Image (tube, rainbow, N blue to C red; front, side, top):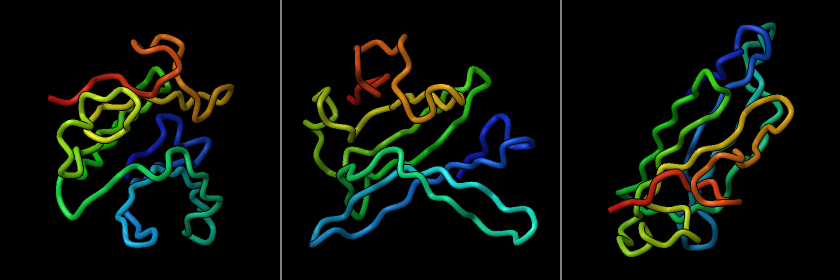
Length: 122
């Protein structure tokens, strides 16, 4: 879980979690709004979905930066070749825009055009 850099005013936080889809383990990144009055998370917005998961090697570190981007690590889900495939989200460090104007979008200065991928895995 990670707090948006402007959490004190927008009450947004981020969470990654795994879930079962059919017989596969998947991972997702979502944002939520924290309701101060009821102390609950509301308004889940799925930002990245169906990232291949596994029982190990799932990553899931999140870091929100002051430039209003967020970094997300994803494990290789025991599929090491996927780490070098730019079309797969597993085994990477991903970077997403979390500014109000492009929330959930791909930053224009990411190294691979039109991709959340910031760094490929080994």
